[in-house]
Amino acid sequence: MEERENIVELISSEPITKEMSSYDSDMCTRSFLQKGNLLSQKRFQTGEKPYPCDICGKSFSQSVHVTTHKRIHTGEKPYQCDVCGKSFSQSAHLSTHKRVHTGEKPFHCDVCGKSFSENTALTKHNRIHTGEKPYHCDICGISYSHSSALAMHKRVHTGEKPYHCDICGKSFSQSSQLTKHRRIHTGEKPYHCDVCGKSFSANSTLVIHKRIHTGETPYHCDICGKSFSENIALTKHYYIHTGEKPYQCDFCGKSFFQNTNLTQHKRVHTGERPYHCDICGKVFSQSIHLTKHKSIHTGEKPYQCDICGKSFSHNSVLTTHKSIHTGKRPFQCDICGKSFSQSNHLTEHIRIHTGEKPFPCDTCGKSFSNNSNLTQHRRIHTGERPFPCDICGKSFSQSIHLTGHKRIHTGEKPYHCDICGRSFSENSKLTRHKSIHRREKGKSEDLLFL
Image (cartoon, rainbow, N blue to C red):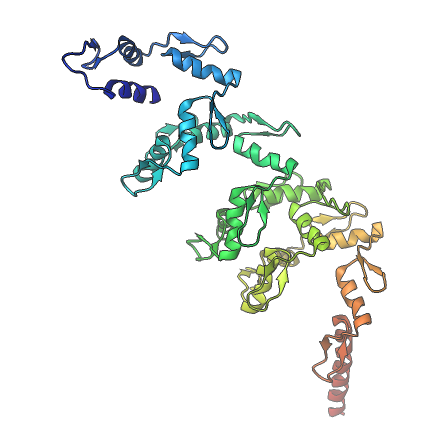
């Protein structure tokens, strides 16, 4: 296509007059001022490519194209931007790049008026309006509007991953994926939120993050109307309606809505904990658990409730907290009808009915219905007590025990008996106390029948 545009430009750049000598094509009605232009046109029509690359053997119809192509092998970039110093192998690429600095967008869509800095970008954009998808996969038949999208898709079939990380050796099917991956090693986070200043390694993550501030939820479920800030969250949500669980564990046969959930679940069987805290060395099976854990060290709580002002270290915890104010419980058990504010609470509850205990202790074999109970149980074997009191230094295996202990120091007694008004520092003590009233009530009723 580019060759053809170049030829048309050569033909139409100057009108041919009677005074000028011209070269007529015997294959079409066109005339040319220069013999070289006529030869280029003929090669375009015949498909002749007499200029081969002596490095890789690829052939071209014009010698200038070989010269440009060879720069791929040599790495030569003779065209330099005088604004930022970036170099390019072709002058056309430099011209396009300069529009980044000037803001020039000379190519306009005649349907919606949107402007572009490159003609190829306009051509791709026009397909949004026309619905044209000229690039077809010869394996599965799926069509794409861009050749680059087809090339990436074909790697699904071939399994090709041509982009390799030179640090850890991991391979990727797309160069953009490799670029994002490298930031794990470099720690680079070039995308900054202009509201809270938080930085991200990928622009797409920044876009999603900004919706925390704006409250935007552009992805809507057409079944129940629920909205989401991410498309992937909507896709996951749909499984609630369809009940589809396409990802199965090859250890225990359990199925999951998402492949990421399956990957996390397999670590229950393998014991793998690939995420390490660089402050205290603690390891985790999920990256989100590491992120939450790090907030213990930093004390950062960037997510604030707009109803009561309480702050949280994670958006998911804020979302759960808000259900206290709204009373919303969208997750219902189809066995007993009980409702929950979180889907994971429903999942754990269902195990009461099924008796399922998928989390086994690798030391004694005892099984648990949820991973948190297994984590607490393991501390019996390890003796780990990760929750120390900052007043007296006493340590506990569970955070709830630390909370109860601190009330010895503060004198706080938040649990009140609604019969006699007595207060207690722990809910379990209130429960035991209430049994006294129940026994007294029973004795009184027995006396009435004497």
